[in-house]
Image (cartoon, rainbow, N blue to C red; front, top):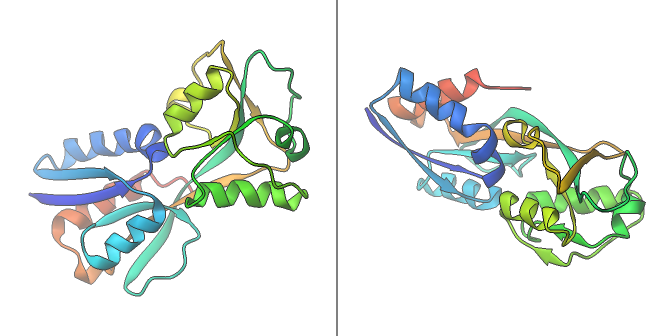
Amino acid sequence: MGRVRLGTSTGVLVDLLPQVLEALGEEHAGIDVEVSIRGSFEAMERLAEGTLDIGLVAIPQPPVRGIVVTPWCEQPMMAFVPARWKAPRRVTPAWLAAQPLIFNEATTHMYRLTMEWFAAAGFAPRARIELNYDAAMRSLVAAGYGAALLPLQQSTDTARNDRMRILPVTPKLTRRVGIAHRQPAMLDGATLSVLKVLTMFRQT
């Protein structure tokens, strides 16, 4: 029994968290997991304040006193491109920088990861639009508005989509996600139970 407050990004919420919550419901039906959409920076702040129990955050993160972060999963970053565009089989920073682009907001870890990938090749492109919802970004790509660099979601991106192509990038780029929480000695039984189930789904 108990309530656990869990913060996560939309990408993890769509792809991995449903499996975790299903397993949790089977093993610990009495635990109420309250899920909220949080950027990694905000999740770390709330963990430190005590207003969040677990955060699924992009890593690496700057160290926060009293907060433990352990690797959980890795997601390959891919180029999401409108199907009608002529695109190479493997997308480079040079090719992508010349296209209309859709980015995450500048305050996010995903934005920083994307811009570092471009900067390593000598590019600093600007986006047509910045937003934080992966599903909305995919919809804009499918509508032909622009291309995006996003983590591959195995649960949804493997389905056929005639309006969008998902292409590998070179050099490769990987988004890493970690589980963040206070020191185990500070946690209640419900939070420890959720952490145990999350650990079962570790992919690193």
